[in-house]
Structures are given as C-alpha cells and as structure tokens.
Amino acid sequence: SEGEEFNCPIEQFLSIKYGNATIESELEKFRNEGFDFGKRIIFANRGKSYTYYIDLGDEFYGQVFIRKPKKMSLKDGTWQYHCANFEEFLKGLNQINYKSKYEK
Image 1 (cartoon, rainbow, N blue to C red):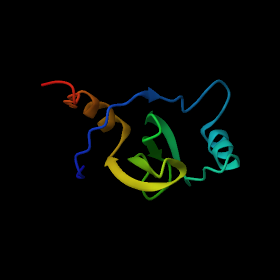
Image 2 (spheres, one colour):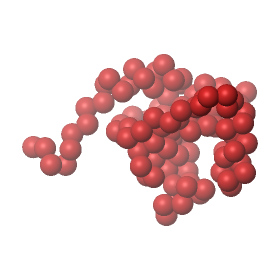
Image 3 (spheres, helix red, strand yellow):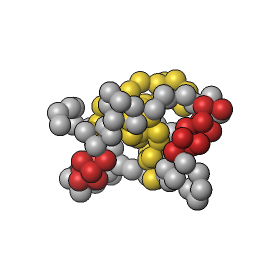
Image 4 (cartoon, rainbow, N blue to C red):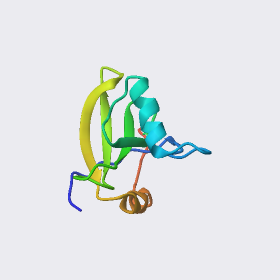
C-alpha cells in the first residue's frame, strides 16, 4: 500500500474481543460512551496522543487508520491512513527505527 510513512511507538494493544463480547457489542459500548467512529474499532494506542483503528466498513475493510485527537479530546480528532491491513501493520512494527530524543 501507499501512504505517508509514520512511525509511532505502540504503548498498548487493546483486546478487540474479550470473553463473550463481540466486536459489534464493543462498537455499541463505544457509541453509548459517546465515541462513535462508525465501523472503526480501536486496537492499539500510544497514550492519549494516537490511537490505532481497524476499519470494518465495506469501503475500507481491514485498513488501519490512526486518529490524532484535537486538544487532547478523544472524541474529536483527525484520521490518517496508516496501512492496508493488520498484517502489514504487524510487519511494520519490525521496521520501526525509533530513536529516543535522549539517544545520540
């Protein structure tokens, strides 16, 4: 796939399915809490600054997007395409050359 290269270290992976909960029930839970992102469901984050979603809608099915909140509000933000699918996302984790601002 094509897109802007964007490397962001992952702090946490979130369970898409927990116990008997379905993806649909998780999406409904998010909607009830005021987080309606359509058919996109969160699966990883970097604190509150970036969250990673997989799209389950017909048009972008399986593609991974990043949401960057506006003014640290998780309900408002902008979407950025990240990669074509979850497998590509996982492959990309091995290619990140993250260097701390403290390293020389």
